[in-house]
Image (tube, rainbow, N blue to C red; front, top):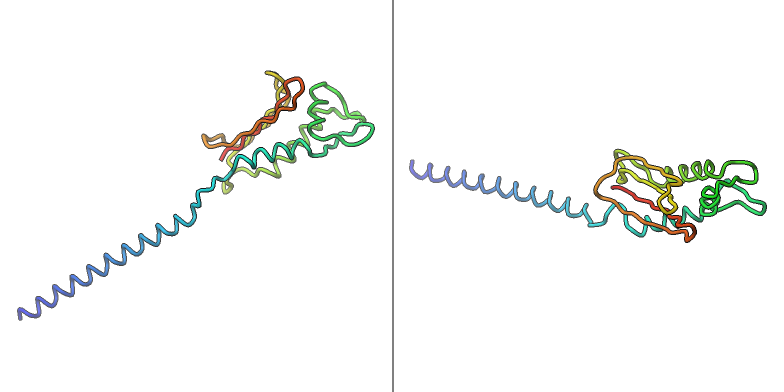
Length: 161
């Protein structure tokens, strides 16, 4: 009878050991899964924000002068000077419409998106010419400033993630 008890306790130890091995294997698989997903890349890189501002400024707007359509950069200057387009449209309104369309298509925000919010400010010295903000502003962000080199005009775009 004694041999039977010793056998049972050996079997119990083997089952306990197998359970521990299974738990450790599952934990290792979970660790590997998370380490493969986090590649260390941030949702937004600095060069993406800088490139966006440069592209935005070169975009051809709906505002026309006598020879061609104006870029957003030229439109910002027209808005600053309170000028109108040749078809009579207010340059600031055209600027607002164009920028809102571009940003809403380029920087999707909200739940399920990596981008939580954004802000765009166009200023001249300390005077605000145009401002657009959307979403949540977190402590994680990338920002870029583009100076237009005239009358202290600056375009500042910030993406929050």
